[in-house]
Image (cartoon, rainbow, N blue to C red; front, side, top):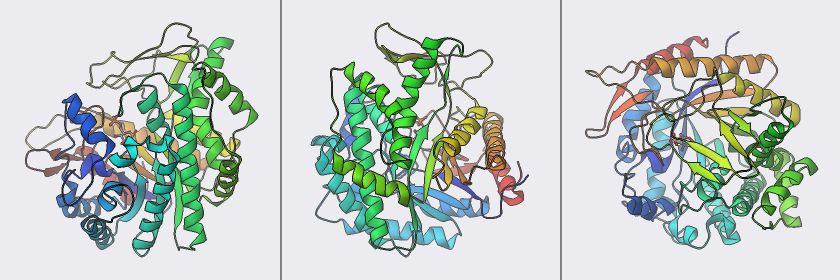
Length: 466
Ligand code: BG6
């Protein structure tokens, strides 16, 4: 079986990770600027200097069969203070980028928020503060209207789960808070309400385009499938990362089964959630109007029952075996015999992506379409005289594409696949040694070098076969 002729073979990027020029051309501060400066490990400047290099990046897309690009608009480039005054230089920059996309026959898939809340709003509580929901809707409406002739495919948020867990459970995103289950669920709910309101505005205005949200999913298997406690632990993590957000996306409410787990996990903090009736009115309407969901998929997890103390350590260096994720009364993530890991301890388990796709079709039959909006392998590439032989990455992408085809065969409507990432770029919690790109970036010269994976991807895109 082959991919269809209109299947998108894309590459993904995110504004803060590739643009550089973080405080130039009128851009306002975002939540990350001070956080990274305080850590002093690495900076998001110049990253891949996409702000100036987008021309060569889009030309490379055209040359290498990449017919779609995920781009995010930096909210603080358009509204430096989050709301109010507009920075025309930022507005014009994205017009130039979209024009270049079309010139190169590369379809832009545009995300409105990829982890970079303007600092002014972040300081007031980010999306835990409902003022930010309103500000996001205003920003979205502005972009829909401004770019309506250039952008057909929109995503509201990138990875609501990652925002929640990295900000409030793992503490790797600003401001490094840990183990706060209540805030994690609350911000996910509030961001889903913001998503829903933006979708309603888009549809109300009658634009000729499509809209959805990008969720980051991981299949959660019990470590011992015959152990009832491990089965429950896997369920806990599944609700936390997958089911809460999938319910909100496709149903517009949380099922009784979901809420049973949510209430138990929130009570660990003696917390409670603010879930308003009017929130569910908009969530339910948007659930019927979403045109697709973006799914970022990297790995699965094997979860064991755990009653010990909270203990999380993020492997942000690529020293294999250094990550730990143990959450009291939730579960502990385990290695699994026979399932290889990257140097960052991410499990390489493409079958699990198939399981997730089939599950969505079965559990949420009203879903319309899925784009795999990120998938790829973080890897320390060897650069020898301009040659980058990234065989493990090719193998990773090949196997995930094979399982994508199997899922399509099993009846799942998958419309496209975006490699994370188009070119090497800044990684939020790992800096620059974890490379994902099809194109190698020399950060000194900003020169791009196609890796072996880029040549391989070109062939797949042209033949529609893996
Ligand atoms: C996704 C994000 O979570 O994973 C990207 O949407 C991110 O922004 C990617 O870079 C890979 O994660 P990491 O931590 O390896 O850079």
